[in-house]
Image 1 (cartoon, helix red, strand yellow):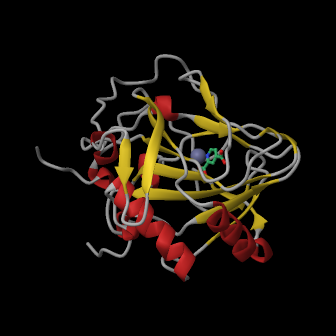
Image 2 (tube, helix red, strand yellow):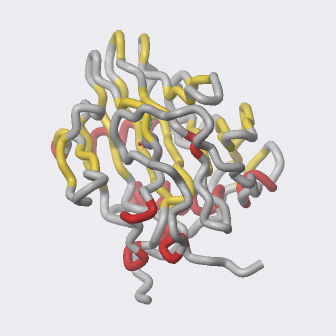
Length: 250
Ligand code: PD2
Ligand code: ZN
């Protein structure tokens, strides 16, 4: 099969709205062809170089894996304390101009580490690479999210609208590795509304979801959100994975 970079594929999708509130119309999904990604072919116990990770549940359409104990409690606390003083209001990319702006659909605060920025971040990136099969450089820097009371991330896709894909920066996003860094007293679930399920944050657990195939198709069933925190706060870490190395030059 010939692999086409996403960036060379003309959009066949009616309208894909970026990281902001969306009005998804039924029937827009165009026969997305599910190809099981590497992480989905490894069985129910996944082996990273420094720990084994148990799969808790698996959903095929959209493809979502729920993984237990990806991080230890101290690693979660370490990410929180290293990021706390660097948090800024979260931004979304404007799907028209491509510019980043603070968006009403995303009320959290966040920051991003550089790839391999410190020993803890590197260790976690190596673990994610072992689990997913994607090298750390196929991903953006680990992003830390902090949601206070009432804060949320409205329904969105993590992939870029095709006209915004930058082949010079690793191309399209293909999957998201999202780690929960604390237990949330109430609310703050990650909701896959089209699939009809949600994940309750549990400290150290993670989800991996995959929404792009080798033909450059994008899975609109992957629409997801973080619903408002009702009690306490929520911390999470996201590694968005790209189709290729973000430093690769074309
Ligand atoms: O924090 C979450 O649960 C969440 C939900 C939806 C994070 C993201 N998307 C993301 O980082 O893309
Ligand atoms: Zn998302």
